[in-house]
Image (cartoon, rainbow, N blue to C red):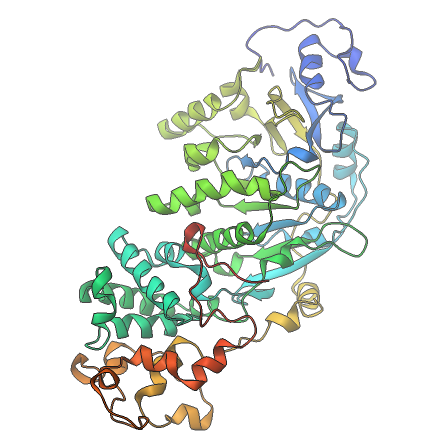
Length: 557
């Protein structure tokens, strides 16, 4: 197969600086490419150079460890080997002591914890690229959104998740998103912590009641129509079984930064196969994890190795129908999180799935084969070729002819400059290329140090209870200890939409207009139970919450 624009010389050439033993037998163009990957520092081995239809194992293609916080893209058509590529990179990062986060959409990455079986095919593939292959399992932690699937439950509070991410999940338009931001601002400033969906419903309903309308009058107010859309979206969202993703204990993203006792980086595998039919939800949750890391990690500048590398599988789902505010926040996060020592790899089918502002931040590229069966495919192919530096390859021909486990690679050198484009036969992962058995996976989950901390959901007093408390005597749930379902606006505010506050019921002694006009929320903030809760460890209540990118809340570690 010819994959060049012009016929290269076939004679031997002097070795390029840093070229490995045996390289003098390589063609001149291949030597020039190989020299661009001869890094003196620590690096990950991706594979061997493909040139003129042959695999040249003396020309190794590598990526500097210190450049993996400069972000990257793994792209290619379905079935071309993207998953195995990210598994290969994750293994080597772990071996070098770097923690890794993997979003496992298809459910086949759990095998990274077990050694892969050796067979003739593996031995042959390893020999082709001069790989010393040994079946190896890597330390792994298994997570699952809301505990749906095999993994330690990952939850977020509504307060922490913030209005921008939640608007993406609820499919709100720009006006509705702005109104939801107003609701969060009010709850933050009044110390009404939103732990789960019923808390948010209660606050929205209160702000549209006769009592609550005045609370937002000076900052625009919340229209009844918009509030109705938000409440209906919340109800539909919960009816689809998605309420379990919000609540406490909230997952601490510092758990992703751990190393194993032997010094290898921990591989955190978030199983998403059980929720893959809810792409808008899980892609947004992944962005929350990244935003939370951004909030809490200190600046470290350029480092010799990343603190964490985050693989964002099915990345196109993140950008589908995203608002401008959402896209701007993604761009800022990707641009700035590098200085926190975190590298982000987006995994998708074509570079066009990623907005140009984000794609421009991705210096490391592993492009698997693309298909060109339709005019749209051909257009995407030409667009992909334009994103690569100039090279001696005919990339349009090459990208449609690559086999499984082959890719076109360009990375950043240790000086930050792009390396030459290199067609590459990739190495084989050393861990199991497939899922663990369910029993083995369940044992790993229940045996995790995180299981006891996060397995059981907790429903403590928050905004819903605070807004209910002043309305009179104890309800049946307070007597029996049973949890009430979230109430709609009519139940919260009383029949006909009119508020039924506790004014005149069980009030402290004293008279006066100010006391009579006291709002429900003011009574809540002044209550003894509220003040007691404000003093509890780790709570956000009693102070205004600081928000950053995506409107997510900063947390104290």
